[in-house]
Figure 1 (cartoon, rainbow, N blue to C red):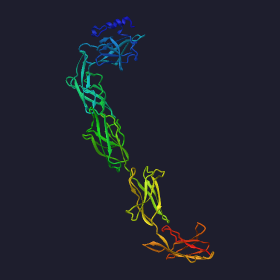
Figure 2: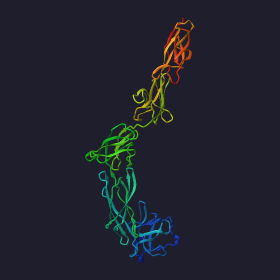
Figure 3: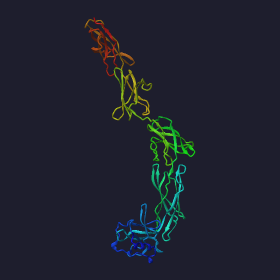
Figure 4: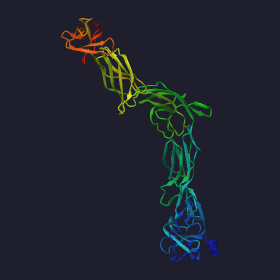
Amino acid sequence: MRPLSHAAVRAAAVFTLAAGLTVPALVTAPAAHAAPAADVAGVTTFDDGRLNVALAAQALWVKVDILASAQPGAEVLASTDDLTWESTGSTYGWATTDAPALPEGTALGDYPVAVTYRLPGGKVQRWQAPDGTYSYKLRTGVEKAAFDRASLDYDHRTAVLSGTATTYDPRTGERTPARAGTRVAIQYALNGNGVYKTVTSIVMTDAAGAFSLTATPVAPMTGVEATVVQPAADTDPDNALDIDALPIERTKYRITAKLGSKRVQSGDSVRVTGRAERLTADGWKPFAGETVVSASQAPDHYTPTVPGLMGSAKTAADGTFGYGAKATRTTEVHTFLKPSAFLQEAPSALGSVAVPQKFKFTDVKISIDAYGALKATGKFAAAYCENEKVVLQSSTNGRDGWAELKKGTTQYDGNGSGCSFTLETGGFVNAHYRVAHAETDRFVGGTSTPVRVGRTATKFASFKISNTRPAKNASFTASGTLQRYTDGKWRGYGGAKVTLVFKPKSENQWYWVSKGKTTSGGKYSLKGAGYADGDWVVVLEPDAKHFYTESKKVYVNVR
């Protein structure tokens, strides 16, 4: 317990004029008893004018002196040891019971404060610092403020904040309306629907100290507080007044939508139609005048922006809507109301649209060999092009009448530059060819550049053997005429390489017997011999420009 002498002193000490001040005998402690810096953290003045000394709760005795100046031996204007330990939030210390009353006529301003105290087991200490002052000034602050609504909703988006600012005069101990024109800062955070920012608005008081602020926020208002700012030189602002937050009650809605097409060209729009409804006290009703959007991404209800926006429109009076949504790629189409702090999260109406991408046929090569085998190779140049269907087509004139010859699919070529294809089938003597791709959900339609491919047709106009019943190993002559089709007629094919071949009756293997060239008129004459019974044929050894051909078979019966 405190010593009785201190308790008696405490009971006797009251605020009074300096001339009749009652003080304990130890008020002027020797310098050796100066307070350690760590004991007293500082002195502050509350909004109601009371002093607060930041000192440990276990202090046995605390007394404050308000001095006329910081000079040594300065007059003590007021003194008291009637302090009580208080701890509220971040504020703690020894607070005076009442606001100190300075002598009548004392000018408003900041006055030094000396603190005399004793801790358990210690001596009486005295503390005084240049920044430890009593704010003997007018104190203006916001006494009360509140919104006219407890919350906002879709149909009520505006609220009015009204309040009153008052001024405390330490000379009279009274609070009166703040001066007209006092600046009050209303600060709050917009927090919701992807919006988070701090907003500060300045309002002025009228002659009665009243002020108001009309707010139409796009998100709930949190952390609302009101503070007097830029007060007159003789005035200190009170601490900010915390005001109840202004939440938003969200409206529930639902939406249906459909797409007018499942496939469009890149950059074109797909028609989106549908209807939106909102939930009211009377049930589901048409949602009129609201912005509906379509996007390639699912709605993000935590941001007011719409990633992947494709199109939008306002709903009609009956809640219906219709607009074009531009598509640049194959994608899902999410249709929903533009996210808002006034709307609940709701599932989007989901559809999908295919936007075929462009591609190129590159390195296309089409050829036909001497035996009529047609081959087309090339590359389908695009990303993710595996298993696309391609068709080899032919036309007589290269402009129209394209006929399908062979179907196939693309294969990934392994280097990321596209997909390869190979198409093989029988070709024509002379025709135009191209590779085509019909439009799909993945790629537009397209064709390679038509190319004319062909060889000159040939035929053996005649073939005979001079003796079809020769003796064993007896020689004979195989002769005839080889022709080619040029300038619309069959003409002798001179200078062609021809070979006489033989297949014995008992075998399936052909053997060449003799070779030669045709005359300028296409005539040939080759020697054979009666090796055994069997078939004899003359064949053309084709070059790069002619088709292969062979004569009819002639059977030779050896005697």
